[in-house]
Amino acid sequence: MTILYSQAKIFIHDENINDLNYLYQIIIRIEKDNVRLKDIVENYIYQTGIEQINPISTNDLHIYIQTINDFYYKYITFCQKAFDNHSQFINLLDRICRRLVNSNALIQTNGSTTKMAECLAYYCDRLLRKKCKEEIDIEKIFYQMKVLLCCMQDKDVFERLYCKLLANRLLKQLSISIDYEKLMISYIQESCGYAYASRMQQMCRDIETSVTISDQYRQTEQFPIRTSGVIPQSDLTYVKHNFIQYYNRLYNRRTLIWLHQHSNGELLICFKNVTYTLQVSTYQLIILLLFNNFSECSVKRIYDETQIQIDLLSQVLRVLFKSGILICTQSNEEENFNLNSIVKLSDDFTSMKRRINLNTPLKLIEQKEIEVFRKETDQGRHMRIQVTIVQIMKEHKLMDNNLLVQTAIEKLTSYFNPDVSVIKECIHGLIEKGYLEQRADRPDILYYIP
Image 1 (cartoon, rainbow, N blue to C red):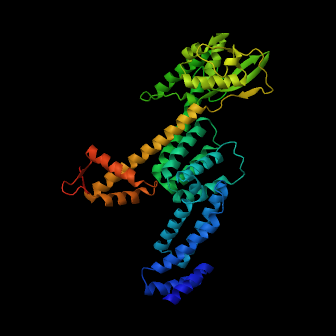
Image 2: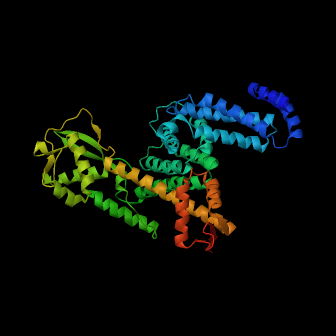
Image 3: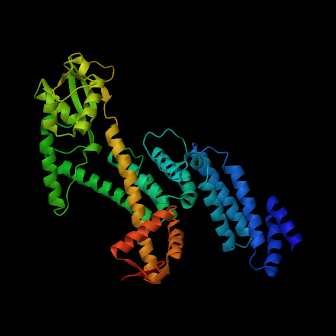
């Protein structure tokens, strides 16, 4: 056998598929488990993967995705032909790819496996935006991503972040094409499962419904809502209430929620007989519209009229001060203004541009979104762990505590890399809620309570 394995090692390193397959037929007649052969194959493919993949910077995800894809399909063909498509060797390759993907330089530098999921979600967002500068075949790179998505840990982080970025593209009309969005979602479903893609598919259906409703509203109402363009200054409130009534006639059991932080508009403003078009957020829009009625007003009055949260209002005003459109009557207060500071339109505003974009992201909103994202991710993981534990106990009725932890880890690994301490915490939580019970004489044995 030593001679056979030595020869097998030579064939594997030379990737001599035909001779290796002949040798494999001999080995499986002698040893059914093939443990030594699998070890040789695993060591070779893993070392080859390190040499090919690790030197590639994960900052260039295009090349990284292509390399992972080429590596996987090269060696899946190798295993299929050399080892008669035996499931043990196919599973071995899957295990190798997961090791390579989830222990790359990016993850080792940041000390967190979630970084890979975050980078991939942001990379997809960049490709799917209208102003993407990368000249690549989008359909091809999406197809190649399937391997990375299958192997990547922390799929839940990718799914949550991708949904957040998808919503932003759809709401702000930044997507290159709804068809490309659906194509990518179909690959996510194929790689990660229906549960990951269902929410994304619903978002695409919702935005298509929104476009249909808006088109119908334009045709039937006197004051159409505009997804872009100039909103009449004096009719803002009327248009809002008019659209709510129209929407309630269509869907009388649904609640319409206005997401002002995602809304924007265009405002015409005239300085020294020159008309400028301002691209503004909803918050900026309602503040600037106040100056149709007031030549100047205090920050407190702006707050009372708009009811914008004071921390958020401060950031919005600073952007308008920095642009030079609004000024404080006391010039030294523009950085350290208070509720009593007086604000007015600038008398000498000028710009070389006729269209000016003031709609920049606000730090307060961005920080809150990051905090909410992290909180929702943790809550989602806790919920999935609890659901998994209950499913296991419902099936087994009685189980050792350590075995339950190990079984839960095996089931959760396809979603994320679970922490043992968090699993134990969830077990104690389920005991307190009355889903599980410890045996009186042996606390390490758990019962499921129907």
